[in-house]
Length: 405
Ligand SMILES: C[S@@+](CC[C@H](N)C(=O)[O-])C[C@H]1O[C@@H](n2cnc3c(N)ncnc32)[C@H](O)[C@@H]1O
Image (cartoon, rainbow, N blue to C red; front, side, top):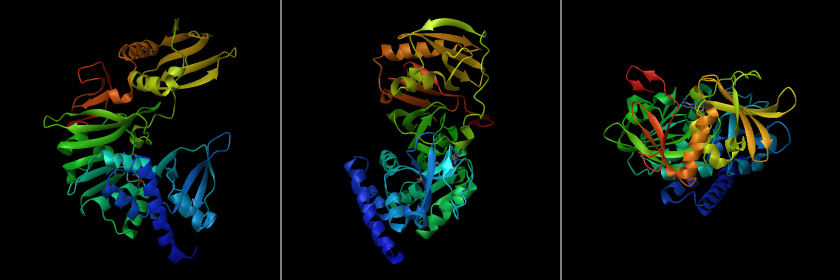
């Protein structure tokens, strides 16, 4: 494909992408549709990786115009897919990109359906200002620049290399948001107050700085997640009293976690076989992995991760470890519907989980959208049904001299 034909081909692919997103119900308003049809995503993803379906360890294959040809690169750049642009916080040598195996993605251009879903749910109006946490490739910042008046978009990226690439792409395309390189968990007070705050990385708790920097009546939209799984997308309205409150609007979306909140490298200490006390339980490890029980498990045990492996005599075991306090629960199968759990450490993890699951079942096993979140300067809670309903504390944020970050 001749270089001068690229803009024409890309414009056609953008219109097709917008039509697909509208058909899927993600793209609902003319203003966002115009943005998707205008912003050249391919300029933000000149080089990226896509996951391949090969069995075994997860493998990622590089995609560039040189490797696949301009036509295929463009087609993939406008697919409704997440396009990975960095692994393990390390820059890629794009002059000779190799397949990547078993690495951990740390930056991307998010799935367009999720990007526009979030932008629609952000309820932006003309003239509003917005703070984005997680610039990534700069694509979502460009969409917001297209939608809003110049100078109304602030976007923060923690990784200087990622931020530099986004800055170049945005400049090439003629968009000029305020780009900040730094830890977005602290927000950017110099630009506050914002009408809207949106995070495109997941957080374990809502940084109170975001509430402080969003004007009363404004909205904070973010995905909450733990070290086991995502809790989903939540939209909080900031009140005049410094409290932000709102419901989960979707239980599915998942983002890579804010780097400063990532799980420690070590899973924790594997307990000795004679450590802890045992009893039977009706709940097996499946409650950690099924979507609906898993949501409750994540709330009940915010510091936990788990893995399965046979013990010394070959019995399959699931180890549930809370590295923040050295509590553990080890599950082994007794029969089709009964398990043995051996627990130890300061918190009886499986007791806490069972109590949460009982509360949830008694309430009729509601969907994540029946849960909400209240954030104040002193505490953060996820509640069921209403703010005075059963609730779970989100993991404690770090305290600073002027409150919680
Ligand atoms: C999923 S990507 C963002 C996608 C991007 N909005 C786009 O449309 O291309 C998440 C980004 O969040 C960044 N990030 C992680 N923790 C952060 C933090 N504490 N502050 C700012 N950015 C952060 C990552 O480096 C990564 O680039």
